[in-house]
Structures are given as structure tokens and as C-alpha cells.
Length: 139
Ligand SMILES: [Zn+2]
Image (cartoon, rainbow, N blue to C red; front, side, top):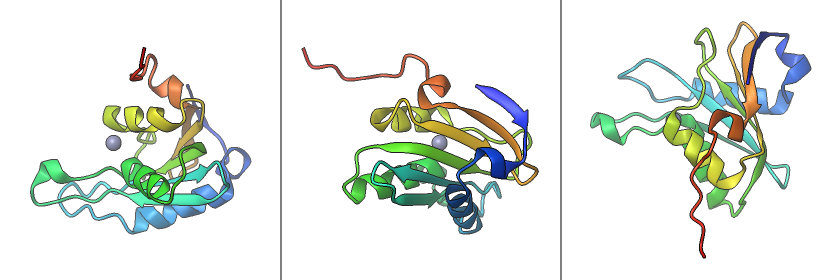
């Protein structure tokens, strides 16, 4: 993984960034006030986005990355090529451990760009974010 300060437009799929920012604006985060938007590009080229959605029963909250994966899988896609996670955190927030495993399930080699409004980014593949991710191997 690398952490860098770069102009977002030179390193990030602009459509994914736009979708992630739109999802960010729709985040439902009345408890943490920490909004997250995520957008991924399915293998078909279609974009799926998601925001974090919290709940008064805190443990029921869902991350933006999980929301985007749910949208992708629910549409029948089983893989993605790239993910953008947008927050206002500095350094940019990266996917939590649970989300890393959920992303790994579908596309360990997909690129991940975590970015904020200042253009700071943290990048790598899903497998970079989750080395030795779990796979259920059938013998
Ligand atoms: Zn998460």
C-alpha cells in the first residue's frame, strides 16, 4: 500500500470518485457523524455504490463498502475491478477488517483507492489490505 498526496483526477476513476462522493452525501450516520461513501466498478463496467447506514442498535450498522458489495452481488455480479472509498478523514479512512474480508471474497486483485477531499489517498489491492484473506477451500 502507498500513502500519497496526489491530485485525485490523475489516479482515480473519476466516475467512481463521483459515485463515492454522492454516496457519502447520502450516508446515514446520526450516531458517529462519520460519513463514508464507497463505489466499485463491477466486471461488467457497471458502478455500484453504497454508504454507511447506522442504527440505534449500534451493532446493526453497516459499512459503505458492504453496502456497495450488497448492491453488486444483488444485481448478479460476482466481481469488481476497482473500489473508491471516500471520507473526510485525514489520512483517508480505509476499509475496516470485516469489509476487507467481504471485498476479498469477490476480488482479491481489485484496486482500492481510499481518498479524501484534500486529495490524499491510500491505495493498494484488496489483497494488500488483507494479506492471507480467508478462503473456504473445498477439498
Ligand atoms: Zn467496514
